[in-house]
Image 1: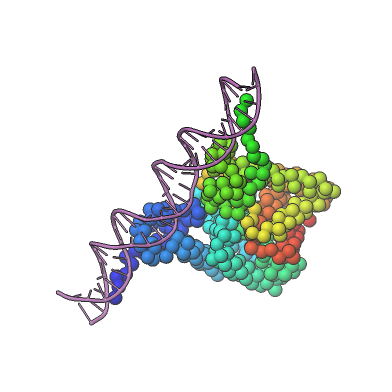
Image 2: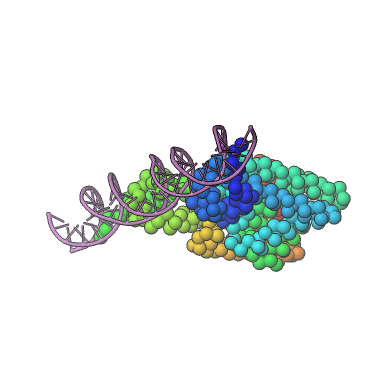
Length: 193
Length: 193
DNA sequence: TCAATTATGAAATGATCGTTTCAAAAGTAA
DNA sequence: TTACTTTTGAAACGATCATTTCATAATTGA
């Protein structure tokens, strides 16, 4: 039987995520990753394949931590209205605590690579499908409960909310005023009622 | 008196814009720019300073072409409602015709560099100020004409619209369905009425 | 203890990075 | 034409890029 990895894979992914998030894919060098993870070059290649495949691992890891946060937030919601509000509160929290103005890594990556790298494009399409399905589900429930209006279909509102979150994250890169952002979210959500 | 530049500066900026827009700043090499512009390396450095300063020139050029389009669109508008609609139509047109899925270069650049490069951060702050001032002006007029409601201030709606445009451009990278996008814009603008 | 297998460390790979150098070419004003 | 100034072309700069190589260390099951 072989020798096993001595490093903590999750800890390494966290460190790598920090670097990729801060500098972007093209702005991050293998040396940056070696420095951040304290792993040897050959260990990185041996365990993660290449810079791109490691980045895809990082993206999935980043996404999964988001999904966990979402699940917790949604579990706490009593109705569709709270569920949507909780999602935006979570993004708001991310923006306020993002002192480096890095923005959302998924949004950044879509902007940087979706038109260049097929594997990233595919990731982003799946990400959009999942996000919109989740939003559509919540909106639909809200419409059934008569909390949200039915001027548009749940699917149409889901795309609107998906688009709004991306806008919010882009806006949050340079605008950290909590009151402005709260009001922005309030305006975004008003159309649902 | 010195010898003058033999190349067409605007044509060179256009070519450079294409490359930077497609590949992003970090994804673009000096060799890419040499190939695209058919200029010699030394001519580029002599006339544009460095990769970064050339990129800033490109950004300004890209922005100015947008401003020209905006001016034309706004001049044709009979009222605030049409003015806002025209702005979104212009972005819609950009999205539909963006076959390479490059997105908006200003949005991409903000995502890639605003947290890394002070000169870019400054550019983006000014860009936001100008965009919001323009939007606020239109919304305010619309409110005075009783076309838009006054549930929020013109400034608040301006930030909302600014954020929505960024979201629209991010969404438009992967979603080119014209009907979906038209509906998205309709939903975005509904809150104003 | 002994093979078998894999992770690891250090160095090197060729390619490409942004930038510089400098002589030659070219345009201008006198 | 002459003197001056700047652009241009080609080559080279050192640094860094992502990746590979390979000997060594480490860990396993037997």
